[in-house]
Amino acid sequence: MEMMTRNKEAEKAYNAAIRLLGFRGYSRRELINKLAEKGHENEIIDNIILILEEDGYIDDMKLAVQFIEGKRDRKNYGRRVIEQKLSQKGISKDDIHLAYAQLAADEGEQNPEADAAARALAKWARNRDFDRQKAYAFLARRGYSYEDISRAIGEYKED
Image (cartoon, rainbow, N blue to C red):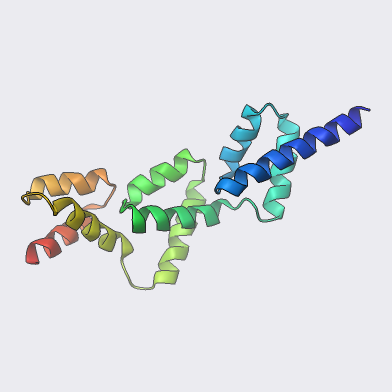
């Protein structure tokens, strides 16, 4: 009887995980936390997570790549802010660095962080008088490196 109850509990946890993953991608840690919040046992959660990883439903590096592309290309965030947000999601530093390495290989010699910094600066400066210090502070808060900020400000001033 106890075995049937555990199987039903495991099925319930699996269905809850699939339902969550249907809305958006979750990191391994996020999904563990969500299932624990719903009251599922740790042993069952661990088994479900292993199954989902084997089936390809959970892949922290793939999630990191998608997250980086979205935040960098659409939201114009810099590397430091993106890395911080990924760490908060429970994605390991190794997976974050592998994701950046994969994107760098895919993009070749391009510097997407510098391009994103230039886009962010142009958008920010659109309705303001340009102030170099304020522009630098804005881009630094967005997580850009000194090199990317200097390049973006230099290119903006040339235009």
